[in-house]
Each structure stands twice: as C-alpha cells, then as structure tokens.
Image (cartoon, rainbow, N blue to C red):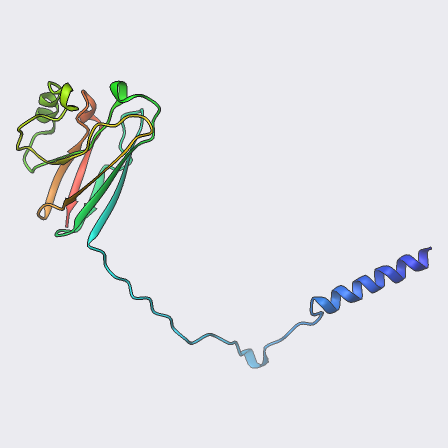
Length: 170
C-alpha cells in the first residue's frame, strides 16, 4: 500500500511540475521587454464642477472649503446622512453674496420657518438648496459666481455658527 501512495504522490507531483511550467526563465544580459506603445487618452475638461456635500446629526458639513473654476456650471449634491427628521435636524446649503454677515443672515433666517429658513425677497443669497432631513438628498445646478471667496452655511436655527465654510471660485 505504501508503494502505491508513493507512486500516486510522485505522479501527482510530476503532473503539477509540468502543468506549472517547472522551469525558471532567466533574462539574458538583463534584457526585459517593455510595451513601448503609449496609449493616450484624451481627457476632455468638463464644463461642470460636481460637488458632493454631506451633513449629519452632529451639525457638520463634511467640507469647510469648496473650490470651483470660474465660468463653470456647478452641480451641488447635498446629502443628509444622519437619522433625525428635518424638523429636528434639518440642513440646507446657502451660498451668500460677498460681504454678507453670516451671523446677521442666520439670525434673520430664523424668522422664516415656513420657508425652510430662507428669507423671502432677499438679495443676500446667490443660491440655496431646500431643507432636507435624514436620508434625503437634494441637487442644485448654478453658474459659478465671479472669482473670489464666498461664505456658505446651513440656515437652520443655530446651525450657522458651526455649519459654515468657504466657497472659493478660482
């Protein structure tokens, strides 16, 4: 019986050795083959800057700085990844014009609960999203404003003190 085991193991080892090549190939004089064909992919620069901004139940945006190119269209996606309803922990994105005070705007916005905390007939806003709650997403598209630095915030009551950042147009 032992002889049969040795024969079977020997045959199996031989088959595996042949099947796997069983020999090493060595390069002569350090020669290696490289594929010299260069494949160039034409990268088209899109006229769209896509920004994804997330919010949570801890009153945080995942970014405090957003950079876009002047003259491009901006597609901003706002996602609420928290678990609380928008009546308790609602979030939005409000891009203010240059020179507008974040705290003055935030304090004024509190009085517009029926309008998702967006003041009516104001000239202080460039663009804003709707107010969203847990698991919701909203998308807006707009043209990037002129080159410069702008403030963005969440206008839900009290959030503007923490949920704010810089929107930089280069």
